[in-house]
Length: 101
Image 1 (cartoon, rainbow, N blue to C red):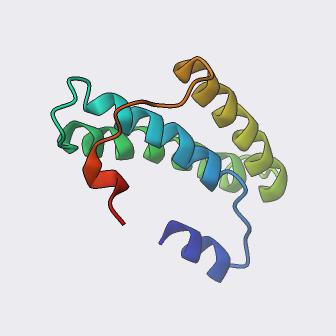
Image 2: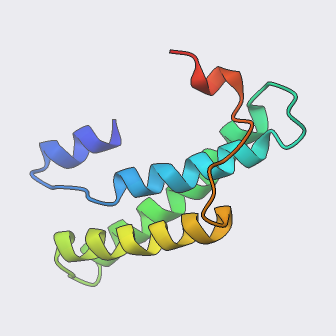
């Protein structure tokens, strides 16, 4: 839904997919004992995604940085964070609730 809002306002969000990768990393860590439920992960998702979106909004609206440049830069920052947090390895033990189609 967030991407729809960006597209309706004639924007283009490059950092959304990269933010999702960082959020997914924290969702995977939320079920640290492999209990099979995702409640801690669901709480961690907005806790990671909202500050990144807020910082994007601040950079674009308040500082006047070009949206394409701000979001491309944020995509690189978030990719580096996700890679650093995960150690460059896939997240094991994603709860089944997130993998069901």
